[in-house]
Each structure stands twice: as C-alpha cells, then as structure tokens.
Image 1: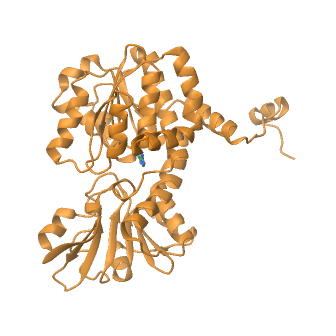
Image 2 (image 1 turned 60 degrees about the vertical axis):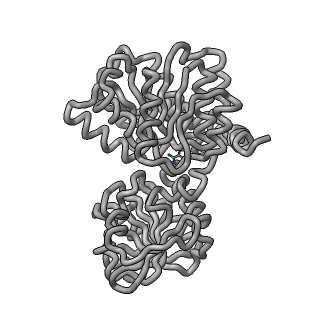
Image 3 (image 1 turned 45 degrees about the vertical axis):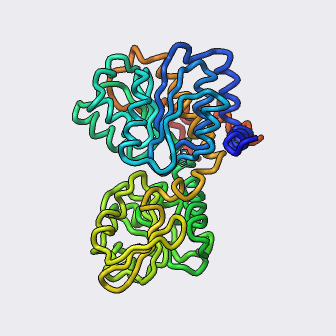
Length: 408
Ligand code: ADE
C-alpha cells in the first residue's frame, strides 16, 4: 500500500469520535446535494474529515490553507484512492496557493470550512458572485476568528460563520495539548536538538502558548513567557514561568517559539542583543510573527544549515537559525496535532457543518458560537470511547442548584 493510504488508514483507526459520527452520517446523508469547499492543512487527519463529509453525501473540494503544510502522499492518496478533488502540494508559491483556493471556489460551494480565513476573505473580495449561494461556514483557528470578528463588527460579513475555535472541545484540547505536542514534534524533527536545560522563550500565553510552555517545561526547558495582556502574564507567573519583554528575553534565549497571532513580534531590531545561535520558530497561523522579510533584507548572509533550517548572519556578527521560514512549525516541520486531538476538532467541525446544512435558512449573516449541544455531544462521544463514566446530578441536587436554600 502507498504511504498516503497507510497514513489515512492509521488516522482513521484512531479517530473514534469521527467514527461514531460517520455511522450516523452514512445513514442520514445530511449533506446530500450540498457542495462543501474546504481550505485546511491537507494531511491525514484532514483527509479523514473530508472523507467523512463525502460519506455524509457532500460534494467536496479541498485545498490547503498554508503553502508549506500539505502532505503530498496524503494528497495523492485522496485523489487516487478516493477520487477526491484536492488542490494542494507542499511548497506552493503564492500564486499556486491562491489558484488552489480559487479552484475550490470554482465549484460554487454552499458551505465553507476554513482555517485562517483566506477562503472566506476571497469570497468577500474577488468572488462575491458566490455569496448568494452560500449557506455559511466554519472557521477553525484563532487567527481566522479575529478576522471574522472584525468583519462582523463592521457589518461586512455576508453569510453566517461559526467560530469553531472557541468551542470548548476545540480550544481546550487542540490549542493547548495539540499545539503543545505538535510544536515539539516540529522542533525536534527540524533540529534534532535537546530541550532539557535550554532557555526557551514562548511568545504569547493564550491556550497555544500555555500548551507549548507546559510541554517545553516538561522536557526540562527553562521557560520564559512574553505577553501583552497583564492578566495572562500573571497567569504565566503563577504557573511558575518567568515573564519578560521579548527584547530582554532574547538576550539569553536558546529556543524561541511565537504563538501570539500578532505580526512583527520579532524583527531584526529585536535580535540585536539576542544570544548567538538562537533557534527561532513560529506556531501562529501566519508567517508574520517573526518578520521573515525583514530578516532576509537585513542579514549579511544566509545559508541552509539543515533541511528546514536557514541560518541568518546578522550585522552584529551573531547568527540566528530560523525553522521553516517562520511558518507554523508544527505543520511545516512536524505532522500537525496528534490524531486523537484532530478527531475532536474535526468532530466539532462536522457537526457544525451539519447544523448549517439544516438551519442555514434561519441564520442571518453574523459570527456565531458553536451551539453548546454540539460541544456536549462531542465530549460525550469522546468520554464513551475512552470508557470513562462521570457522575450526574440527582433531581434533589438539580433543585438545590436552582434554590436559595441555606448551604449549611
Ligand atoms: N492538522 C490539520 N489541521 C491542523 C491544525 N489546524 N493544526 C494542527 N494540526 C492540524
């Protein structure tokens, strides 16, 4: 069997929540006659998700949401074994990337499933003719949701979009445990370097930053967190991490991972006092957290020193090593989040897409939270697959919750 098929089969075997949903979708065909356009990181777990929608009756087209994150073996298997229309390859130029997004849109999708917001933005700018046929869509990640919030606030959003990132069953696990593990996977694959005893700087203490800091610490890294939010900064302090400004933290950093969702968190100016040989990487959606163009422009020399690592010699005489052009390290140099994590995230995506298919006529253009019942349903399926049972309130306890009864 070819590698891409093996990877898809392995992922399918470990995606229990998706398996439970598949049983129902195959019977009920919730997407019969519906076209779904997807822009996601095209790797094995994503392939299983796209196939789930197809098994539920959808006509699916899939492209990448990042020029460096596709797994070519999986792309080939999806096309050859499953006849799926996939438009993606690892290492796309900007032109290829947008041409692939447009190929997905050429299908006039009714539902969009986006990661990072490029597909939805394209419909609102260059492909406005598609808006009238659109039921709505889902957004997977923090960065895309920030964009959608701005669009909704400005009254610019033209169809309903669901904020999948903020579902509890998504960000509690995907952003924290998923990013925590997959960043290490990418870092280790790219460098083969030790974390124990190293000074590690984590930029941002959202759920992703928390996961990265936790796992770097778990491997013996000496973690410093940088933040702009005073409350998150205190949280990092109380979780036992040093908190400092980026410029100061860089002075003795061995490893840096940004996960802020903000651009220009590191420029060559920030690197003037950085420790010689610091390894820089990014886990945020876009490659603008570490200013790559600025590094390219202001370095005196650059050289590839390992497959995914480029060394930039700076005017100060020091050098920095950058992994995967500052693109998200967990996918560009690693395998993405662990299978069981994406199982839960894609289960939320699948049930939200089903909700849209059923309810789109009553939804106004706006940004919506994932209905609580969907979060709960995914949690219950996951618990059942783990064989874990939990308590329930008795009728007496439920009454107590609603009463003004004295507590003693
Ligand atoms: N695999 C597929 N989509 C992913 C995502 N958004 N983050 C990490 N791994 C993924």
